[in-house]
Amino acid sequence: MSAPLAAPLGWRVARLVERRTETPTAQTLVLDVPGWPGHLPGQHVDVRLTAPDGYQAARSYSLAGPAEGDRVALTVQRVPDGEVSPYLIDTWATGDPVEVRGPVGGWFVWRPTETAPVLLVAGGSGVVPLMAMVRARRAAGSRAPFRLIYSARTQADVIYADELRRRARDDRGLDVAYVYTRAAPDGWRGEPHRIGLADVNTHGWPAELEPLCYVCGPTGFVETVADLLVGLGHPPRRVRTERFGPTG
Image 1 (cartoon, rainbow, N blue to C red):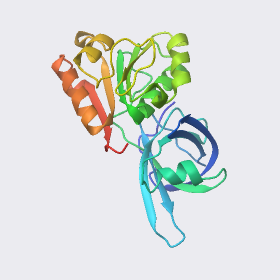
Image 2: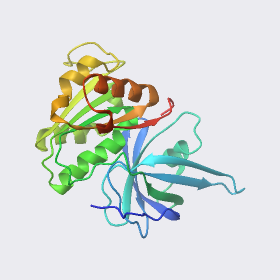
Image 3: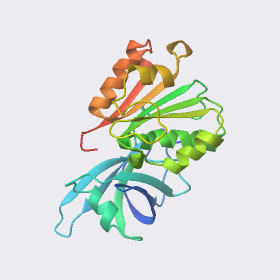
């Protein structure tokens, strides 16, 4: 999988070909985008809607995995009172058009040629670009060791729950740990809490191994985790972050 050095960033017409329910508030949408140039895990696209009266609204969504020809996947979480996500989840029908632009982003990406250990830390729907990296690792046959720490409100809010369970079992070199902030499932050790030093220290990589660290989630979550990683000795240049607003 590769992305061109200068990907075209004009608007393209895409059409919905498949949707999958991930959680009560999140769905994966598979789009057919003729002429898609390819992308790297961690990149995103802009999605634009145009109303009959000409009003336009655009939002950015992370790509959820490697492209399959002209087909790409986005995982969208419904934002209360949002302009775009409710339409994509509740109204957008198979075959309907929408405009997309991308791929966008060149810093928050993982390349399958990398061999260093990788630490992924996700808050809520921030798992989407990190899951793209997990999927790309498997698709490329990479042996780079991965660790994912996923913070979610409850077990029901875990996006890709079944796939993560399967990959943690079958993908050699991938470890997955969870932090629950509101309610924990039976058998999970500890009480619900926000991610902290003990979680990152226990489930992450030691700084001396020089892992690449990717952190994605709400702004406060990302700032907290990035500070923890730097405090544990990880060089700031190896801590890459992607954030979104609190409504995400």
